[in-house]
Length: 302
Length: 297
Image: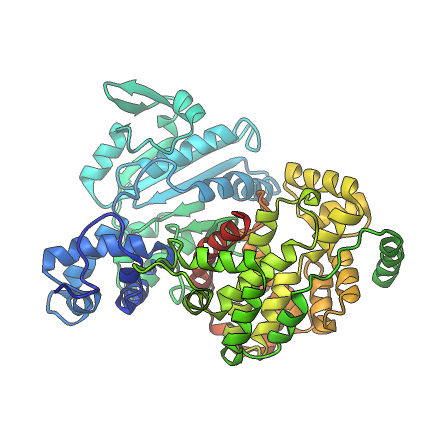
């Protein structure tokens, strides 16, 4: 007879399977190591992602799999494989609707207001760990759109960096399949893409605003050169760093940002315990971090 | 100034025959809430549930829903109550009895949206109170549940004005209390206070209802006001709001209510707020399930 909590890879785990306390322990471990949090209403996702790895290593229950993640000699590699599995499919254009709304309705107007006071009319965004270019192109399209209203008469630049040469080359090509563009609103699709066989090519009107380059975030000497940024986006990259490297990299991001600048992680990623200077701020449906001015009052824990 | 507004509103409302009356089932329920959930008599709850056929059917339906579904279908009220747990049954009882406060055709804010927000806020208030170490978590729950009852008063006593006001808030994406103050001269917090007094709801909950938007000096309102204020804000930021987008950036750690609570409940200083926020998304699912059960009848 099969153990009640045996999990096999399939679309929808049963309610009973989801109740196994082992999942919450795996969730807590993932959060502690990577900062990615999966609420209980997303456990079905956690279970289906874990079950792929459990099948690969031959673990039958969450408790058994937890052992692979914590006690076995190759636990670090297994944890990395699991994180890869969890973040798979998260790279697409216009990935997070709440974050995009927050950008357009709160962040960009707030940045424009504070920079206008200083007579600046240029914004510089940085997509750190840009993978194959989905995020920086999305940002450029949004900024371009905003130049019709909030940013009328402004210029902008999206700096996109990644460690992987092949990703950077692919990003520069700027050609995506229909799955990658599934979230792009129709009006953006029409304006900012041209068909290329069965794929879609980022329009020439967008490309000049994005510059791609290879950058290792752990290379302090290179990170020191990044300055004068208004908003940084670093999604599902820091999750692979150990605590020390994460803290150092986040400090570089902090230094790279201008006062009143913003730092965004992935949708369920947190900076808790990593950096005390950034302020956690909430927008409808999303969170971000904000760099306050020197004179801003200090709050409690963020 | 505030007292003047409330007095004026009180005299205006009492002249109108449309003030909502307290549902029959609410009094015994409120009495049940005076004790910690683990001391609540299961038999008493089963009795209350069975008293109303609609509620009994909802409990059984919810116990069989995808969220709680088991291989064996649940048929008896008692099993349903046991499977759902005291909290959820009480949520169901409350939302059901309160949703009968005003006739179905008099709702101006969509009732599903209203209950999603009220129940969501109740759950967040209770969780938040637990984290703080605030001793009366059930009171926090109740204050969260009732904080917006002024919306019901407004829908009954000033339907046309309130309809226009709600439409304005939605259209301009501004907070509802701001729109109310601008167009009606009072807010649902004011009218909620008047109803709370009429229903003889305990003074601290009545105060939380009155001050949940404008908390003023948090020291004078006490922790309950701050808990409801912050929970309401969190709900509006996590898809449990009034059903429209409110563009805002909130730095909780610098909200006056937060700063006040940190001084009185040192636990709060160690709270991982990002993680707490992410967990709220599971409430959205849970509350959605509850509301669709109540409104599927």
